[in-house]
Image 1 (tube, rainbow, N blue to C red):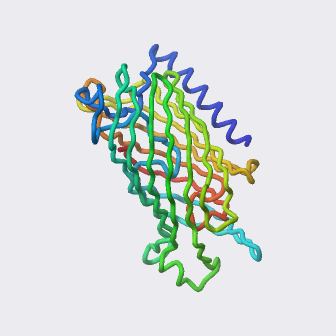
Image 2 (cartoon, rainbow, N blue to C red):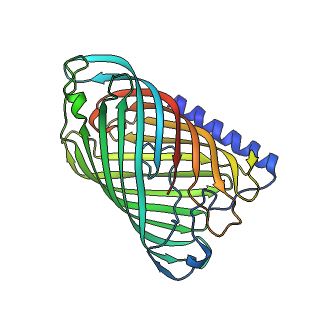
Image 3 (tube, rainbow, N blue to C red):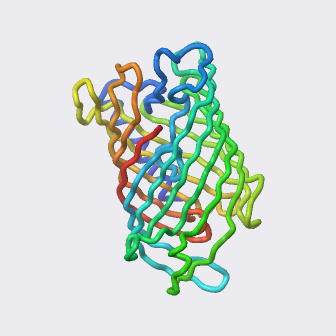
Amino acid sequence: MRRIGVVLAGLLAWVATAQKASGQSLPSTACGVGIPTAESSGYVGLPQGDVFCPLVADPKAVRSFASYLRGRATKLNPTTQSTFDTDVGAVGISDALGLGRWNGARPNDGVQFALSAGVFAQFDLGSSSYDLLNADYVVGLPITFRHGAVSGRARIYHQSSHLGDEFLLRPDDPSPSRENLSFEAVELLLSLDMGALRVYGGGESLINRSPADLERHVLHAGGELRPATVLFSLGSIASIRPIAAVDVKATSGNVDRPAMSATAGIDIARRVELDRSGRRWMILAQYYSGPSPYGQFYRDDIRYYGLGVSFNP
């Protein structure tokens, strides 16, 4: 918890410095929700963009990415405990399809419902054939909303997780043990934009879970910093700004052992004066500590650091 406090304090200090230096703050849609002017009023079917900004540091956020990670895992089970180092290639392919949006009176306000889906996989780069370790499949029905600086997401989603075949056939220690892991969950997150700083919080409850010892309730909070300062400009094409974020999750049974994900890097976006901002590319340094976010390894504690590239829908 002390590490989490230090990271959050650092984020707050950075936003104060950045805003003082730039003399300005970003609008409530600093993340670039990507709503075209032609779709900013009334009801729109199959809309572009969204009214809720994707979460930058959440390992299971709706975005596509590829990362190289160096980490250490402590494998916990009733009979053995072992620690091992590994290099992991983590990839995710995830997107959301807007089904309909009721726009509000102000630009970028409204309520939207969508279908989201993604697969998140990890590969052992230390093996000769880059063995698939785990794959998490996530399908959800999010309802997002925004009113000025306040936005939120209510979602029901399903996740199932599977070990890779090559990993299952390994004879060496730590030996894999397959779990029939799947669950459905209901989630609610609220977000507040304060200039360059965004904070969010909420939680989720598992309504159907296998195995039965999965923790039922999860607390979820975090913060993101998007200073207005432009590090580099590509004229009328794009701009590059710094970005940093932290995401924290704690289950009802492990409040004293939360999962903390922190990331910092650059955000590459099309210029805001264009009618529609495109996908936002990010190059990010990453750090994670806590219970594993990889489904089949949820009983393990892991710590990793690395570098990745991602883009939001």
